[in-house]
Length: 185
Image (cartoon, rainbow, N blue to C red; front, side):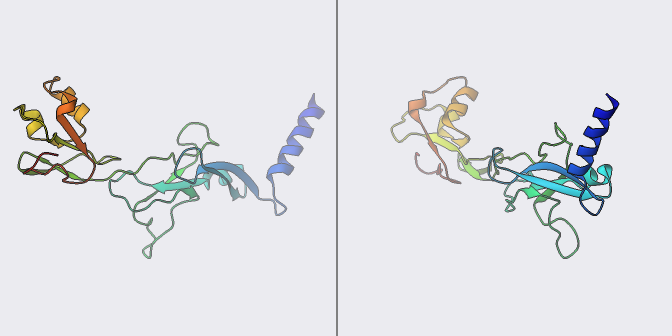
């Protein structure tokens, strides 16, 4: 039993130690536009603990309207002030789930936008997809929750209004301020 352990330990040492005595720590990070796109990464250190301490992934932070879109191995690139480039966040391996699993999970970017609510431009919660609603061109009713329009989809607005209008009376649109205040959608 002891000989088997010694052989396994030796094989593990040879597999993870490079020729200069340093140790490689393999891990993976998300690198594309979905969790299914990942890359094999390696951090190298003087010993196992040092190598693991150097294992980082990076990706966009969760801020709305973030123009940074790169995911990958290693920490964020640095700007001229030695700070992470704008919009990037680094994460140490092992901070989420399995220590060999990427900590930089893909998240669809969100955008800020506005929709009309009545005559007023209203700031909407940041979302992956812009969604405004208003009355359909054929609507002749007077349900304020529909005639005012607002942020979100017709289905969500109908639920919030306790089903006070029919979905057929509502129109969705997907551009900022697309539910104009002066005309039906």
